[in-house]
Image (cartoon, rainbow, N blue to C red):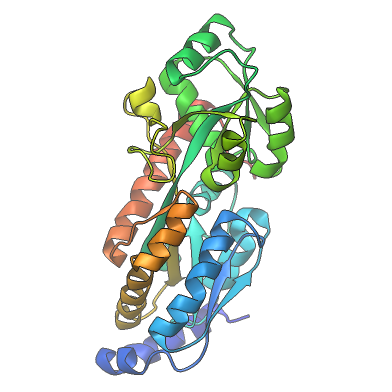
Length: 322
């Protein structure tokens, strides 16, 4: 593993090379895109759809390397320690911002990395079991208020964005509900469909087949605006809880001290790929949409997300775990 001293030495050497030359010659070998999640999930699916297109745009293979574990910490630590030359990148989601707030972590996405750019946003569907006698967000809130502590909601795990999306909903609606964490969103479906759990914020791609088959009832999407893959489903805000908005997002980081010229070249390629019409159609089929940003814009987004979820976690009573 590369030591911190070696990383700074490499960065110092790179700093003496003209930036235009660095960008012009980069990349000259394959690029590793590390994911701190297992294969098969939403982040992995998007990464694998993007990798061949990004390989073509950059003229070098982009290899997806899944390193799951420790809430994304294993992959993040590996990328953090990599040489800052653009050949090791880290794909992250909001979970990589939230996890270090809740748990002791060896990394901080704002401190230990150079932001390359945001890529994709993806809302959740607020869905309920069909046996629950509600057909709108307003009715769900009314039901919860008349049955305090009797309504259960699922999540992909304590501290996950699906958990915090529900905590924010609970806070803004001023209702009392019970959180039931699962080991991933998919694990909750049997209980949701059977009615043992009443509600949950679910990923678009996994929930929509159940909604279409009437095994679940979609009440709203969590984003600030409606999504093209479910145009008849209102947002939470317009359906009864003004101001509510939560979206999952994905972006790319490089190790700290990566030369700005390389970061800019990577950003241009990534934004070009995700905003391509073919890729946009692929994203839309999963309920996602391109949200390319500049490195500076992504840095501001990371800061804003950290501040927002820190406040919500503090208000929810969740405590940092060592």
